[in-house]
Length: 87
Image (cartoon, rainbow, N blue to C red; front, top):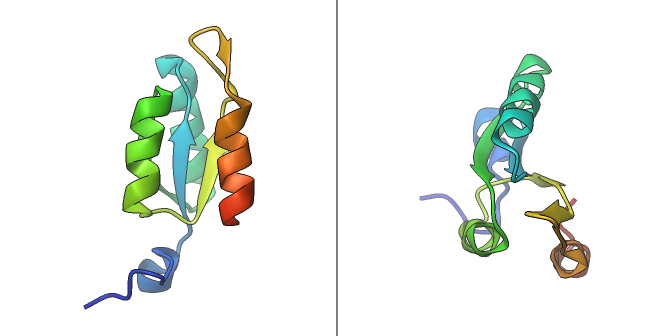
């Protein structure tokens, strides 16, 4: 069984990225770019509520974050990532 503190990349080699982006077209383009450079995408989430659920799963190595979701600025999400040491 995998250790919960072991990053996902330790199991498959390629880093795994969580994408937080509310514009679906932009999110899909980002996903394609991530895959093209050899990384994996753990999920694409479009709201801060979905992001909180994804953070709880911790099935990613790093996060690509759009601070402006649905026209609202969410610096607390970046603060959380910084405080928890998530790149």
